[in-house]
Amino acid sequence: MSNILIITKEKDNGRNLQIRLSELGHGCMVALWRDDLSEKMGGVVPDLVMFEADGHNTGVLSGLVQGLKAKYKAAIMAIVTNEVLNKPDEYSEVDDFIVQPFGNRELMLRIKRLVKKSEGQNKSLHIGNLRIDLDNCEVRVAGKTIELTFKEYELLKFLIREPGRVFTRETLLNKVWGYDYFGGDRTVDVHVRRLRSKIETTEEIYIETVRNIGYRFKKD
View 1 (cartoon, rainbow, N blue to C red):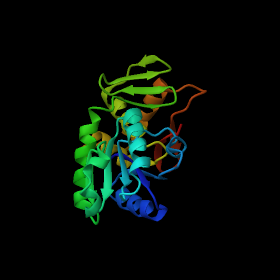
View 2: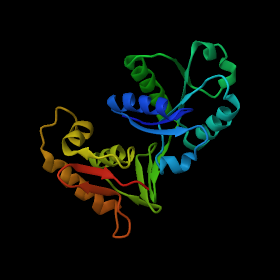
View 3: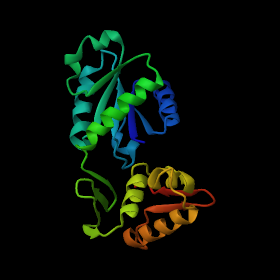
């Protein structure tokens, strides 16, 4: 599961792709070429940026792509037609191209390959005063190192990747503990409670309980 930012010329195109990616289990945000991306993303760090390239927007997108790579070190995928694909030099910052129309299997495989590649480049995750150093598996809150167990760390890392998205206890068990884990919902509740006690204060709350459903990481 990845955080994907879709940059498009037409909202409808972005929404259609967002629906497809959501059905494949990814978190998605849609923005237009000239939107304020910082405002749109609300502190979320994308693992992958997908944008529509029509051959006429190279100047705008070249600067945009360079800025995204410098700030987030996210992988970049251009959605193109065969005509645009014949001009690869105009998109030198792009990590991969996918030609329209494309099927879900091809889309899934390309995303998986790019995100895996970019994980070695994106060294940290952060929201507010909370930062996770992925290289050293180190968590800091307001500069102070927080000692977590392995499962607490994995749970935090999973939740912070998709702030605002609600996960059921069953989903968290499957994604963090694995499908072969036989523990019940109580396991999730205990770990969330312990995690909260380590990273939160009365002034700064990160993990929210969604009654009768599960948990979500609060948006910055």
